[in-house]
Image (cartoon, rainbow, N blue to C red):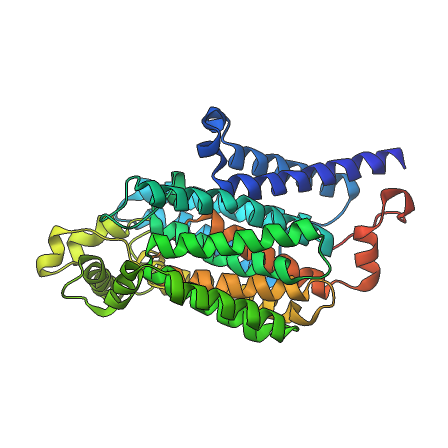
Length: 422
């Protein structure tokens, strides 16, 4: 029993590690506390959690969860990315991208293995909501003080949030989750207050970032969350209030930039997307199955761009087209299967009595994130894999047999002898 208690302690420590990872990721903690930079807190906490969860599974004689078909598609994608170095336009870049993808896959699997009860899912989701206050407040403050505004009006923050599009899509995913905590009667009052603040400030930051993809993603996320909820009146009212606030308080520059999304001939950013899509089509015609190699899209650009587009290099500006261009139809179908499996799994969890409300918010947020990524194309984003891991965890919890759930959530002293868990 003492040995089992030690294993239980390691499991809890590993879970604390992934919660710390969520906080470090969403708050960009090294920008809040620069002295932590050399420690690389997000990577360190995730690596610690991964090592502990593997050790605990081996010591208990428990099987490691590979997340079924979703996990198989994701692992296959990682292997395909590594193999792409053999035909890549830039093998060194593809090797680095492949290794980065494998690292993110390891983080995904670690979270899926550790977030195995409704309580654990709620706490790690709330940790991300709480941490999101940092970039939201930072963005609003930068806009207020007019610090390094892009084009004179686009606000952003620090670290990965220097890119206003990445900032917006990361917050789009968290806004429905924040509001889910805010309207829940099952949460403590202080958690509801934090949820409301995080949701409101997140919307403000998205607006001030002036991200067109962020605007579309936010509308989708709030709309899906409102219509999918078991308490449609509450979620619908919350979403309506949020959208009304946007309509009333959003600056004129937000509407002007959002309306310019189709002005390809005038707006360089919009025109760049068209060029990138044309390059993707040319790559696909030349290399339909393999693409140009993981991360090698910009390196292959001069070989496939035409006319005026040759003088500029852009990323694919669409996460699905990025997969087609870099990893061909093989990589695209593996990635599409993973994303659809994540969304489908989240939807399956909607009716679960304990995780249903949170699953609806996570699914809505992830759908909004994907909508943003269809105008951005960030393939290697830790936020993406964190969000997919939470949706997958909700699905697995909802499908867990009652007796297995009791085993996972009970105290170590009251548990029976450990048995394998798939």
